[in-house]
Length: 600
Ligand code: NDP
Ligand code: BG6
Image (cartoon, rainbow, N blue to C red; front, side, top):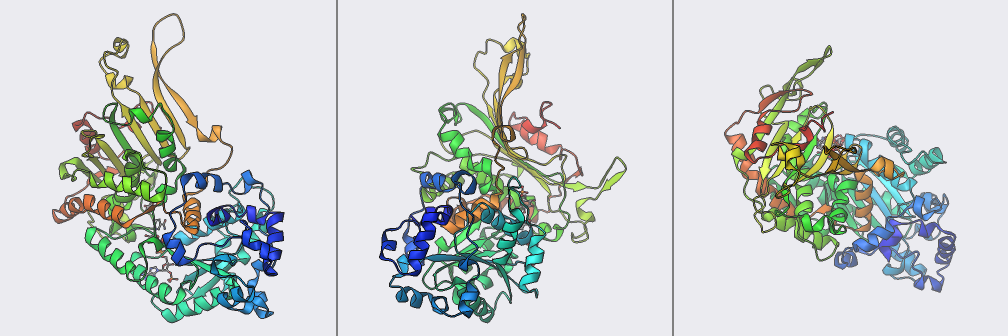
């Protein structure tokens, strides 16, 4: 089907595909039965198409290494503008082209144009272009594609390429031909300068896109890598003057999606004036992380876990995000949001929903999102007494002074914005009744780490309890899913220390990804970009999920802000405010990441 052609263009770059491509240019009738070159669905059809199943996804995600794909050819499709100059079929509009070779829209060869709006910015340079290059390098991009940068800054194509080339890396095992591939990739990158609210400027972009699309069925992806206050302007300009007429048009929107329920709803309403819900891909890059994606596999395909996944066996769940650097460089942005909106309301809550959901009917996007939204709607309202907030202050260590949050010139003096928060959340349903889900997120802490910790209940009538003394917590099993860095899944078990005596030890059954898998783990943005190109929505946030997430956090945020609650100060590089320990202790929980065996 079309989807696998997109996910794994390796198949279309095989010798058979090359032959099929030759037939296409001649309008060969056998093309009609070829599965190799089927186009992306057009916009109307794409809207009706169910998301592809997880099963298909698993198979089609295989790109270069596993499939032994041949690199994308450097022939005509890389320089379609040349063909325009030279006249011929490529000079026709997509409809004319299709008619000329006797195909209707559903049979024409397709192309994808990816426009990075805000291409001059930090995220585009740091994440989006490198992810696109990694996909290209792995032959995961469709055969025909073009990338356009769009922003107000004046830049030539060559300047964009120079800018982009500085952040591209040969991430994947430094395999052969990397610099060659980089050059080929950069040749497919172009730039157009324009205003975000100008339909005229987007019409100019449209003209350039058409030239590059070369008469093929055009599909267009716009990545809004810009501040949210201009999302709607861009959605309007892009939909009116830059969208595809007979292919699909999709828009990836970066967080933050509003600041509370009201602003988020206004943003959604604004976007929906110009886009259908299924054209909007709200990105939460944590959903694209390998171990977050693996959560469902771990739970639903392992008999040893699924039966334990409830209040009956699980004592508490901890979702921990910590960074060992402050808001350096992003203080201006951060001060308007704070850690609860920046990390908890989206990244950690999404993980919680995935973790706690009931078994979905299938792994299709709508089935999964239906289950996630049920979890979010079942959450108990968050109480102020179940939350601790903190802010880092300056600290000198080893002769180096680390700045406090308010030392940042872009942060207002006396700001009360939290850079740390811990919260106890509860899901009011039969599976999770009474189980604390503890979240902790902080900047400028002692370590960089994101993990999910599942602490199981004590073994009833444990025969060996004397060996553990009074501290039964030391004897409980704990499953740790370390999302980053050094991805790992490990299970803490009790074991006898070998020897003639009877001494017990707590040990780990340890799956360390770096030791088990030789393949490098792709960046989350790679997976998500590829999914957006394929129209796979499983890892993107639906508007009702977003509403439910804001409904949970908005009253708390309002109360914190209206009552001007002062955050507890903690030194840069420390383990965070002591209040977080008391919060956990209220529910008889100890933070697993701070236990003696875990601290680094
Ligand atoms: P930037 O602040 O770097 O903005 C991107 C581009 O948008 C700029 O290069 C600029 O381009 C244009 N721009 C900036 N401010 C304005 C303004 N007030 N009015 C009009 N245009 C403006 O953002 P980032 O690249 O850091 O982030 C992009 C989006 O991604 C944001 O929504 C951000 O919150 C989100 N995000 C960013 C992350 C990061 O690590 N950077 C992480 C997660 C999300 P020009 O002047 O050339 O038009
Ligand atoms: C972003 C937040 O969404 O995620 C940043 O806005 C944070 O504040 C970043 O640093 C963390 O992402 P990652 O992938 O580096 O863990």
